[in-house]
Image (tube, rainbow, N blue to C red; front, side):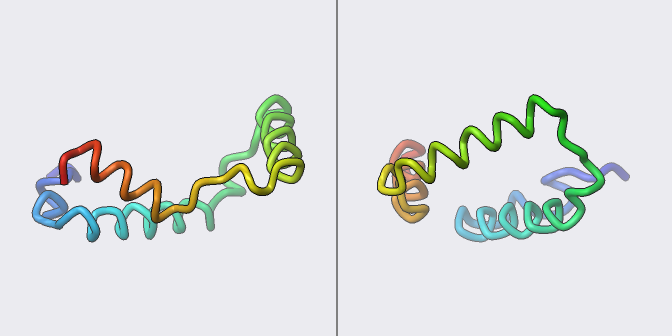
Length: 76
């Protein structure tokens, strides 16, 4: 049996539950980040983004606003 949204029952979760699951899965991937070494180009791009964020700390959108915008876009 292959792993899929249907076989795992994820398709029966509501949007909030699916988002929470995505966050939880992402957290487990981050724990294993050393298994995915970055190339020099990727590291430079991340360093550039961190420097940009440090230079413009108020240029952000809170996560709750992002989720709300996505829900509006999806008509939920």
